[in-house]
Length: 354
Image 1 (cartoon, rainbow, N blue to C red):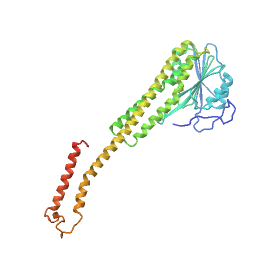
Image 2: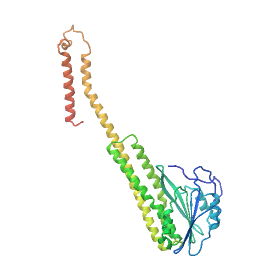
Image 3: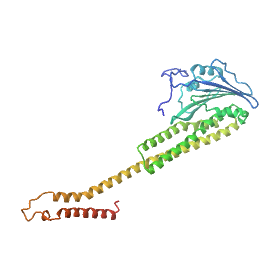
Image 4: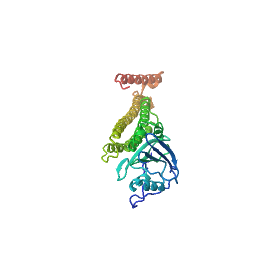
């Protein structure tokens, strides 16, 4: 995960300044045009030199930009569809927080699409413009996430009978619902780590625990604002979104709430797994220390006996050790040490110290 993924204009630049970002990570933009109504549909790619179609009465015009949009492309879209320069700037400077802005001629929505690339969780910005009979979507990512929407349009499903606001709902529903498979994968990861902790953690267990916690915090930070975005669309007072579409947006709002509740639950689970890991490590350390303490305690009197008989007193005095002249004195000392060790182990066992 990148900790600072946002692009930004040069400090001090005028508001609405479009900056051509020179980055090796830029994805060549592809533009797709879809014009449809209940009975007819036209779909074709738009080349950079092709004229941009004006919205037609009775039709929905959808322009989808896949990849990193160029400054020239955004300027053309801004001129043809009267898009506000501040909204265009937010599209070019990706990494924005999810938000909903109302302008004179259109709505502007920023959403974040979570995706996993090379086992790394990343957020890709999706910018949506809703105007009179048109929708413009810009997704700065590698994969075409709008393919299911185009398929539904080709199959003449209820998308064809809805207006531009219903298309906006369908795109938001796709973006929000993408969180469920990611959370399902996260649940599997947490369960796997928890089983590993219970069976016996290995060296990289703590690393996976911290990765899961960091990804959950990242998901919460990215997805939390989207709840307010959908809620603001449901409460729209400009009447650009029909009441029938608001019913479906309420369902999207419910999904955002469910996703955030799951994230909070998984964050608690990840914290519990971390506590379980630390408790397991501490218990293991306590067991090791207990065994070492018992061994040291058992050998303490044995060391005393060995040290006592190793002082090598002279035999001239009657007060010196008589055992030094015993025929089996060595075996006598070993027997004393064995009895002491066994006796101490019996005492430890009765006291349930092991």
